[in-house]
Length: 114
Length: 161
Image (cartoon, rainbow over all chains, first blue to last red; front, side):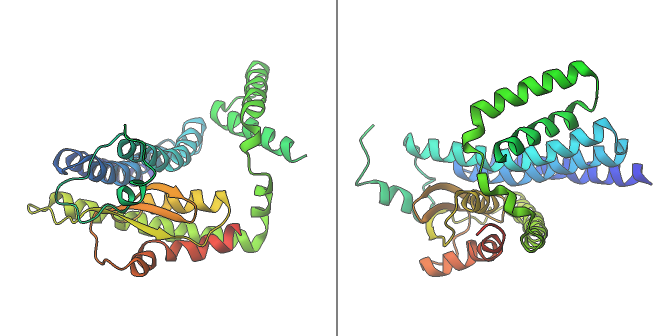
């Protein structure tokens, strides 16, 4: 029974990861790509780790997988935030089809031209 | 006392990761937890213990369930946009206001926003969050705040403030 649950979660997780990778290739600029990479890959990876917990049971491997879920949930959005902010600060513009960029508008006055 | 809690927390995580009670593992864990505690102890939130209050803990659980449902929704949202031939996106960076005051609550809010449908936190300046939104539906700042921030803000206010 646990094996069936584990394998199902594994399949779901891998399909989310695949969607995230397709998004990484298809979407136009770095910010949109980060969106796909962060959301899909985080949930996909958490699902794969959860499937490990179901598959092996609650022993040393399972506990490590549970801890890794927590670490991924904390570090993945923080990393995405750091990359997006660094990209914007180093002058990478948004895609031409973008509607607005309040961040650039607000920073224009204070910005030292790099 | 509160610093000691921090050390115990680090040591506990070490024990779970190694999953062994051999004296060499315990010694290495003690040394590493001590180093991490000395280096990073000052950024540990001193009043984090108040999360053990049952009322706050209940709202933390409610927040966890809400967060998970939004996260699943976010994944289907991204899948829909990525797999669609026409790619229905209208991206841009918007500015929203938050009522939350403590650093801890703001960190959780920013991370939750990043993992929910179509939004990515870019920066946090004073009371304002700059958010990259993949599909902007309105130009009115109040409405944006309502859509992006409020469902988490209410819960996090009860948990952390």
